[in-house]
Length: 263
Length: 296
Ligand SMILES: Nc1ncnc2c1ncn2[C@@H]1O[C@H](COP(=O)(O)OP(=O)(O)O)[C@@H](O)[C@H]1O
Ligand SMILES: [Mg+2]
Image (cartoon, rainbow over all chains, first blue to last red; front, side, top):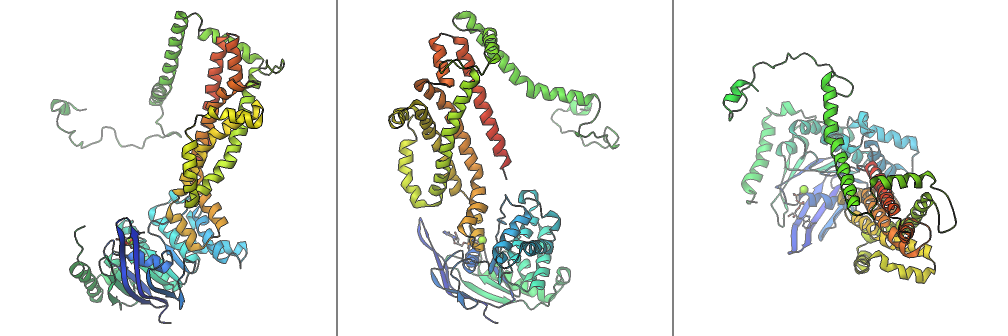
């Protein structure tokens, strides 16, 4: 299946106090089933907007978005979202947060013990079985993001959408979670779109990197296919010329072609 | 502090090569404090900093009161008041007809009125707050009414109550109702409006039905705001009840104060002031405890 998610001439304008602000114009993008796509660009260029459009949390002001050849008319559990700031409900335990999603998606077809099993499996997959009874404020930032990933994956979405999921984490935790995500995505083969501003992260994780031009009226600037074989290993890649070549292409785009105007 | 540091007061402490004490593992007790005399000293310290000031304040207050009562003979001093209170609370639940009942009955009657008026206000105000906060259109409809009625003094509502209910009891409940409803409406509505968009996005991605959105997201997210509203409302209700009862009569602390004023029993009025203060404090503390349970 080649065109799993399609963005056709998508434009997005926001009505603000200063008038209409065109954030995106003529965005065209095809996402293949099972691929890992990274969206990279300078802060404020419209990456989150693209992701929210695919999630259905925003409606485009021009163009059309398709998922499985059907128009994306709103959010739905077939597109799991991992939000930038984890968005766990603080009054529910980690288990409760995941269970809420599981219950919603599978509650009609499965009995309680099956739902429980799914919740436990999802938490086990991100290595958090031991913390399932804890509330979000009792766990670290990295663990919160893991719960967010578990919640999204437990819904068995067709597409997993991640908005800078590791942006707020320290370098070591981030590396650890990147490896974990590599493993999980290899295992579940979920189509994944991940917003990032970290070039190494993009090259390490993705099959293709979509580089966005600066806003306003941002669009897709360039797409780079990353041919590095999987499974990928962080340490081995460090001395791989292909890795550095890919990295240089993205760096060149970000820091020569789309140099960020003084903010 | 070493002598070296003393001789050059501006210099920082030189880095110590050796710790003064050998770094042997220190004995730990269960409460984390080292054993021995230090422990006793520390609890003394704690007492000096936390127990002493309130006691000192109260003592000063009593002293001022005593001096004032010596100066003005119509004002009973602490000792006289205390004696009257002991006598009064020796038999709090006697009943000599509608105009002469024990202090316990008066407190309970006032509490019951506050409870009913406040309970009705919560029953109406909290759902109203949810609706006003959730639906912007209704919120804008309600805004002028609320801003018009909220600043009105609670007692101004009493004649309306008397007119409609034609009885003193329901009228004072009505005053409690109308004066304690606003904090609950406004705090609940503000809470709903402040529910983080992220939480609502979770609900949207999951396509939760509206009932689940309410029970799993809106209600828990608003609960702390709601409890703040309830706390303020109880405070207002308890503030207003004495004044309302003074005007309506019957059984209750406010009426009792008025009655004792007519009897020129000033000691009892002072007792009433303390009772109102202490009951109010207890209500407030109970709600603070409740609020603490729902901090996430
Ligand atoms: N709801 C909104 N209203 C107005 N402007 C918005 C809104 N959301 C995003 N924008 C603007 O659109 C642009 C892109 O935002 P965003 O997608 O969040 O950028 P990124 O995620 O790449 O940092 C920014 O200039 C931002 O100010
Ligand atoms: Mg963003």
